[in-house]
Image (cartoon, rainbow, N blue to C red):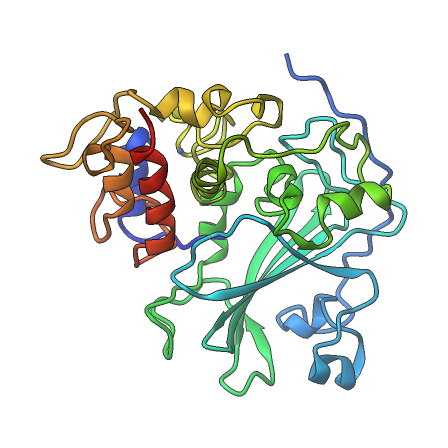
Length: 341
């Protein structure tokens, strides 16, 4: 989930750098019976099923039975906050992966993402699939002493003790999460397949039979290490939620596609990232900057990198969820562009 700031609607209208943000019908995965009735106060994180029941489970932060930790191989920039991620799949169910680029999760699935600043828990976000077409998206704000975490439906700006971190409201979550068919961003094929993935990875999902249609080959981002780093960064930070061909993605109308499609990983030049950015004109650019998204060998003149380096502007990229430029991500993209011929 990302924060929507007052300038986002205008930024999205400008269509980001880039312009803003017959499919086989998937087989139904087995559905488990779900009792959505709360057994305790639903405004408390302790009631969501993340931690083991009872005071000891909460005190020790012991995960509840069936809850699995996972770490994608690709990192999402959130202004330097550390994150931990968890998922619960109801027993006997599988993730529908007929479309490997757009997974559909069984009813009852829950995902949590915990944010920490300098070791202190700040917020935990929850995605809970309560019905076939209905997800609960909400956030829990941790108390100063971390003794409790309470739901904040309206979000919170500039959380005290952080570097201007903002907690999104329930309404703001859809700006990013609506960009995927079933609204889940980080738990997906490309991000779970890399060597840096940990916990419940693609390999574990296949071994445990948790996918309806497992991949027949190993999914790898193409190219040399520098190309892989840049393509992966743009995929996770720009493509998964916004710059894709999904009809609900904010950046779709821009024509810029930064999501790595699993069927187009044979070569860098075949990725939509390369095809729609290299020597391609941008719809909106910064004053004094070239109108081309990526100019081979000239990162300083490439609109893509200049938009990434911008903050406090209607043209910043990403347009929401971050107040600070990501120096590591900038370097990955700079090296990729400058090594092109």
